[in-house]
Amino acid sequence: MSGILYFVPTPVGNLEDMTFRAVKVLKGVDYILCEDTRTSGVLLKHYEISKPLKSYHLHNEHQATQKVIDDLKNGQNIAIITDAGTPGISDPGYLLSKACADENLEMICLPGATALIPALVVSGLPNNEFLFAGFLPQKKGRQTKLKQLAEEKKTIVLYESPHKINTTLEQIKEFFGEETKASLSREISKKFEETKRGTINELIEFSKSKTLKGEIVLIVNNSL
Image (cartoon, rainbow, N blue to C red; front, side, top):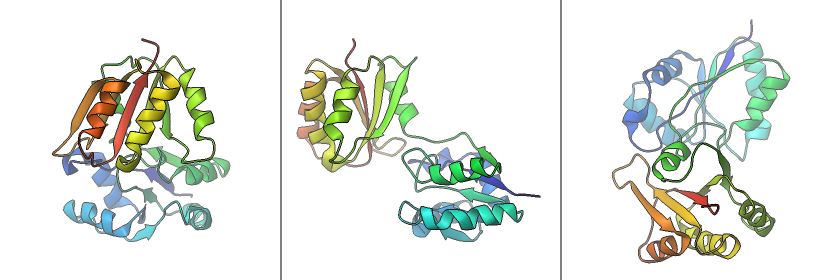
């Protein structure tokens, strides 16, 4: 009988965002796949979870996936976690999910922490329909993607890093227009959590007035 692959969300900030079910699942599997054993080790120690950790990240997932599939076929139950949030959402996990689907192996994804939903809810922008675009392409295809997104009438959710946020905001102004409504959330579920709402011009002024730290979720809507 084949084992089960569990996708287990981990806190994006506050460790108390971990669910009881997530802790129970991690304590019950044969081993845990993680992006960084040191980062995950802190979380697992906090919840007194003692299970073998195996690295599974963007640089080795192609090579590591088949071994995981073989272990699942041999009846092992395995969990995959990332440094923060839900595996597969702008993090490693998709390749493994596809491989399991191709092999008709059982997968269960626990509901839990992710950065995009809290940021979307507090943005004050329409959230009945939205498009999650993740990280924009770094170079090749970036302008093409921005042109496509500028035609979108739904609210758009983007992830961005602190050192690129000013460039991204300026590009959104260029492609979407300076009156575009937006919301910028950072440090979600952490001590210095902060959200700034306004036009894209107001967000550019805000971003340039201080050094932003932590991963950023940018919510944009140019149909209002």
